[in-house]
Length: 178
Image (cartoon, rainbow, N blue to C red; front, side, top):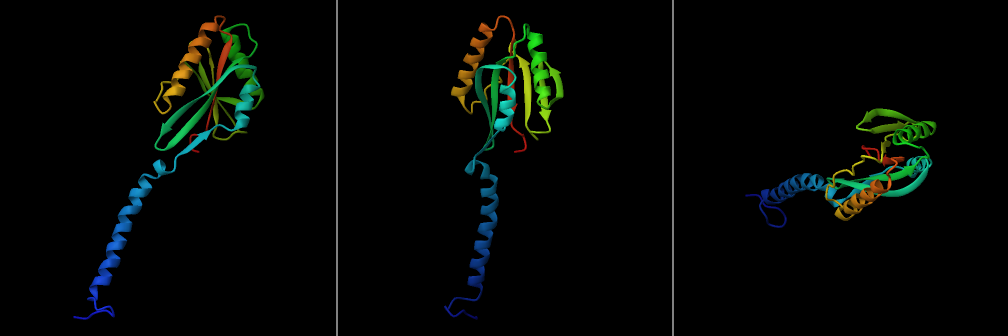
C-alpha cells in the first residue's frame, strides 16, 4: 500500500479533505438559513415622508408600531393630526388634499375609511390616512408588548377626547422591499 511522506495511507488525507468539504457544505446552508436571526435589521419610512405628514396640520400625538418577521422589524410612524377641519369627513378630505399638494397620490382607495397613498418622490414608501373616529390600533404581534399596550391606551384616550371627530391618523410605512 502506498503511503504519504507522513507515513499515512494515500487515501487518508483525501478522506480528510472530503470530510471537511462535506462539513462546510452542510454548515453554510444552516447558517444562511438563520442569517436573519444572527443579523437583525429594521426599516422605517424616510424622515422626509414623516415631515410631509407633519406638514398636514397640528400634530397632537406621535408614536410608532413595530412588526417583526424573520429577524426584520418594520417600524411605522403614526401621527394624530388636527388639519383644521370642522367634521370627520372634512378632516379626512382635507388631509388627502394637503398630501396631494405634496406629491402624494391615492394608490388604494378608501377601505373602511383608510386610504393608502404613494409618491414618486419617496419610492417604495407609502402613507395611510384615516379618521381617528373608528381607528383601530393594529393588532399587537407581541414583538414589543410594552409599545403595543402604550399605543392602545393612547388611542383610547385620544378617541375619548375627539368627540367632534375632526382628527385624522396619518401613518408613514417603510418600503416593504427594504
